[in-house]
Amino acid sequence: MGLFVSGASMATLTCLAAARFWAAKEAGWNVRERGLQAQQPDLVLYLSEEGHGCIRKAAEMLGLGNNALRLVPINADFQMDVNALRVAIQADRAAGRQPFCVSASAGTVNTGAIDPLSLLADLCAQENLWLHVDGAYGAVGKVDPRVAPLFEGIERAQSVAIDPHKWLSVPVECGCALVSDKQLLRETFSLVPPYLQLEEGKGFANLPWFSEYGFQQTRGFRALKVWMVLQTTGRQGLVQRIQHHNALAQHLASLIDAAPDFERVAPVTLSIVCFRYLPPELKGDEEGIEQMNRALVPLLQLAGEAFLTGTVLRGHFALRACILHDGTTPADLRILLESIRHAAELSRG
Image 1 (tube, rainbow, N blue to C red):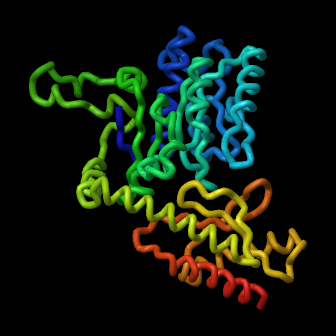
Image 2: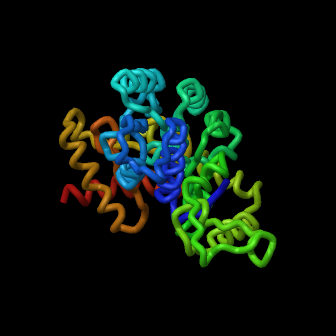
């Protein structure tokens, strides 16, 4: 079942609400009737240290609280460590808690890393856990044959959150919640008051009421935007766009690796490249490098030649380039690096 919503944050909230309802149902109680005030084991949700902040917000809004979250360590490739996850699940069960959901990433917001989805699907099946996949940015990357094998296992997830207004270039707002069990999603949200009830087989009664599958009652026609983009682009056009962006990211990584004054700080999986500027005079001065790179982001943004954001990876600040625009070319990537060098000169005064 697919439901268009405002964005991946709302899609995540929708999916995790379904996961919470399922977990309570599995344990023999109805969360819609009793809420979380009943004397039940504490529900536990797992995500990696690179998981998106909307997972935390969703846990708060669903009444689970941050104490219900377990941040699972990552491996060298910024993926969730499956062995560490297994240990955490066992520890929570031993403490009398109820693990119920693993939130994996199909393209993290920081580096574009894809968690080992097939292994996670296996573990969730063994432990009877709900597998949710945050594919807001990266899930559509599966259409690129070069990286498609990395997404193996996503089809086994109970829910997936996607943002068509990112890589599909659909105008904001447009997110999508995908839940494998349509009836369960309906049980999670359906509430039809008398003034909306229709006689079966008459009038609009045969049409789906999407308000039964999510929180929102009045809804905009978000599907039209997606349909128009897909009609304009076509499947092959979409494949070519994503292949192009991923190839550009690999090209930028090669330029950075070849430059003595830059350092790449994460593997490049999709179209995100994380790196640092390392001027010769700051070699060995970690504090100076940190300050320099932090200063570069606003300078670049205000200059208008390139738009980068910053992030923190393993405790160190990094520059983050996310390539999503159709018009980006290899020449733009060379301009990007020169713009960084120029901004660094300006920061020195």
